[in-house]
Image 1: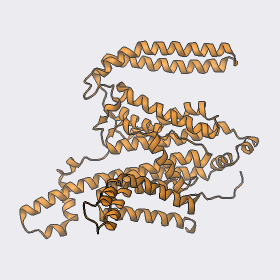
Image 2 (image 1 turned 180 degrees about the vertical axis):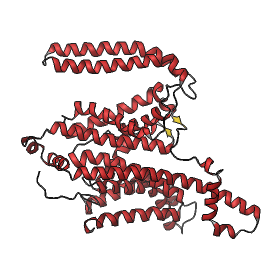
Image 3 (image 1 turned 60 degrees about the horizontal axis):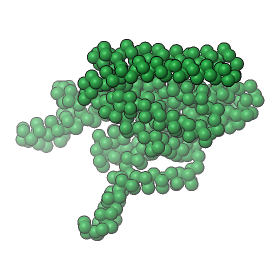
Length: 458
């Protein structure tokens, strides 16, 4: 228990801060922060698997997150029958052409030795395939996007429960990671980081502009929930009785019948929001706990020790007969798959898919700050970093406003300095994040919960 004392203390402080938000601001906000902290924790675990276990720099996190969100749309939205009738068959043929191109190129690479002739054949296969794709998909896409563009204009999905998209999102992200890994994992660390960032931008650009796939920047709203809707709870008798029981003291203070009914109605409305977010927090907590158990088992298994040995000295590990390239590809796929799960969870919580919100140049930095602050190589540290940084990111603005009002309370409302500071509150978030990162790097350079080095044989 002593070895986990720092972990328990850090998580207790984090939980206390979230509870404090509930008392000082609102429980709805506190639970929203908790839900996004849990989603961030899944993302940081994915990034930590790649960086903390194997030393791989992946700046394409937002691309895999977007694929997870796309999975939520393709799994949960019902199929648009009119769109399938006018262009579904053609798009399915295009998918078969792409698969044939991939297997054709792979066959050529394995069958023939490296030469200019082989390169020409591969180029011919790709060019011919792209021509056929354009000829078949062009008219089909035009017809699909013309089907009720204000509400649909895309093929839709499978109409399944959205929870299944968490698994599909992992497969989408893992599949893309396999392709990228085959191409880019041989690059030097800095080149790998740039390549993954650019590929992330490409993925997001495709999702934005291919309206037939998921409506592009027109967004998909009203996705099915895995939890009850607030309006349903507000008309359900068992929930009304539950709220009345929990607030019996406050309701007994009101003697007027009409006022009591109005108060109960408002409490039911507020309680329905809190209950729904509690359900989301419960689902997300199950995912985080399951991933934590699996990643902890993997970290301290012989495979985990091998990965850390490859991270610390890949040449020595290669000399000992370990297939470094194969293991790097495996860890790259696993980490990306976990990030894909987080992307599907985020869209599930929001209830809408907005490709324009995926900004790699901004949020990739934030995820990496979470990993660094929490402690790379330590799963508990990665999760704590997701909690701490996201909490700070959300609460920096209201905390800054409180401090500005406190220190300028003696000034008039029209004071130029006071107005300037209040108008600059959105920028205080970046200032606070920068100061927090500098403090952590100065006093805890290995993170709040650094990696625990255990002396074991390789």
